[in-house]
Amino acid sequence: MGRNNTNLKSYCKVNKVKQPKDPYFCMSYSLQKKRMEVLDYLHRHIDKADGRMDIMIPRLHNSPGCLFLENGRYYLSTDEIGKVDLNDLSTDFLGEQLYFAVESSKGWKPFLNYEHQFDEIKSLQEEWMHVIIANKEKRVLLEDGVALQFSGGYLPDEMATGIISAVYEKDGEFYVCLVGQDDIYFDDLNIDTVVAVGDKLYGEFLPQVSPGTVEEALTLMVLECKSKMDKITLAHNAKTPASMLSLLSEDKNEQVRAAVAINMNTPKEVLAELAGDPNRDVRERVAGNPNTPVHCLAPLAVAKEQVIDFGRERDMCEYIRLAVARNPNTPTEVLEKLAEDTLSSVRAAASERLGAASSRVLDKPCENESKSAPEKVEPEINIPAVQLAKMAIDSDYKIRRQAAQNPNTPADSLALLAKDYYWDVVSGALLNPNTPLKILLGVAALDQKYMSVVVKNPSLPLQSLLEFAAIACYYPKNFPVSAIIVALLDRI
View 1 (cartoon, rainbow, N blue to C red):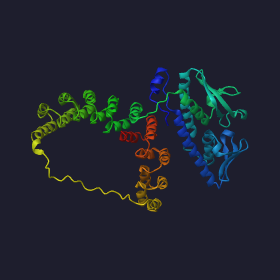
View 2: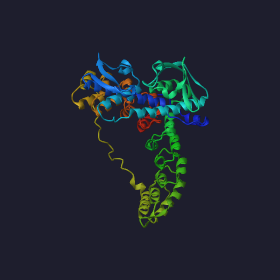
View 3: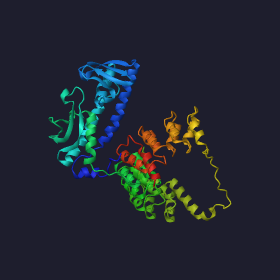
View 4: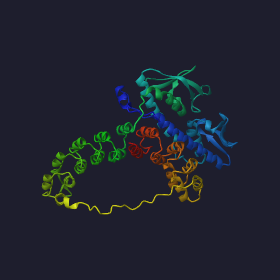
């Protein structure tokens, strides 16, 4: 997961080429998921047909085929390709041919359009390939060679396999050189081979910078993250370093800047800059921040902007002056002016602050006053490991949840609990510091719901968290960016 980099934007700008996404990771993740979905789908339909299902395959000239179960393995058999294990078929064949063949035999249009998704992935790969070749301006040699395969039905049998020795671009078209054969169009590669070629090329031709510290990972997320909500999460957090807040203060979204303005860690010089922000909400947050320089509060205290709202004149800066009046650092002379404001809410707040300042000496807390908090009941943890192992397989999910949360529960029991039916049990196991790393990483790859819990586990190595962060900033839809940001801040 260390393929992302912070230099990619400037690298592509210098070379005057379009910045690509990371297609290799995108395709590998998507294809693996789709392949397993289609295989599982086919297996279930073969089972429903008592281990044998007859279909017509459109891409093989509507030739008849048979899906069947034999010795615990699932096979496809046709006159053209013979008997083939389903797991040995390309993703193209599984998605574009067998999936649609099974669906068409049922007489209705399939809901999932795998063919369309494959076309989108191939377009992404071609865009990325263009960047690689444009940057090098020469043929890209694959020294080790990559096994070549084509989708069934596209090419003659004698060209069904081969070894790629080079990839290049000519007149806007992409070509591959085959050992002992003529060059062919890149579009004739099936999607599995496209991924294999991408894997060979990626590490050699794109700059690689993987974050080595929490500060580097957060900087990467600030620079590359496209999600407004994730940036707001980072800007709001009390642990966010001042350097990150300075970067976020220049964000084009006013809600992000407003979140920076309210953060107590925001440097005074940044707050001074935001005091002149064109957005009223940002200036209001600055006015209410106790760390705002005193010299910035006086101009905010006289802010006024009259508008006609539903036929009535309205002061749009009322809340800015109100925030100044409530700021504990507002000077007395400014409060005295605000106590004569045209709006009653501002006058009341300023008068209250002036009264509080005069009676502050009388408000000292009594030393004899009890400050004891109610005792917190801690869960029982001194349970023998043997008993915890029995609790992990109990029929009552509440008992299993107790075992999942106990730090003394054996690792093998936690591995079992991480796959429990109840989410409370699963989340308890994923947060347990005794859960094996292999289980944590495996479960995190399933879904962002799982990863958002895994990143909170204190035993998760920092390197794993940094790798999650490096990928997440490029794929905010697939990863819980906010949860990763909070987890990174907790490691500071």
